Image 1 (tube, rainbow, N blue to C red):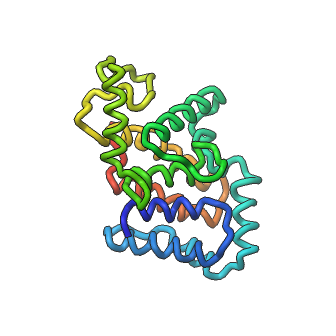
Image 2: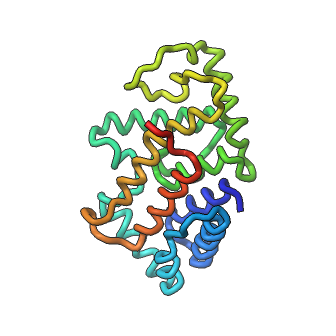
Length: 221
């Protein structure tokens, strides 16, 4: 079980459940990866819930959690930005990153949906069918260098990845910044529990957060 396959399994878990067995297998694959990497499998309570629930119950819980509760909407831009214009800019940045990395999301979800972002990370990690982070990042950097954009001065307010990279030799810098500065904070806000009420999904949110952090995606300020 690779890191890319783990991200792909997590991505499927945040889609509308259609097969209970698929959920169980996905959770177990994540558990195997966490065990191999010496990480706590924080989603164990959610796995126990899935094991004791019917598919109908799981579907009802998914809809009640993500469709009827704005505080749990799986769109990270919704949690990161109160201004709709800022969220729109975030999605434009994501679409640009997807295109440059050769990633085409399945389905019709918006680019800031958690399942789409996890699938994107899987693609970057070289999951079967993907190009891998190095090749994808090299493609992005090459295009930026051809346009002369990698020599632009840094502007803290400009998050047009990867056009503001300082070190083009760091092939993963663009991905690390995007995840560290926007995706990971968005997951954290989505997973905050006490003020939003409890949910079976909290342990799964915690698992995504811990994997993003432990895998070195978080860049220190």
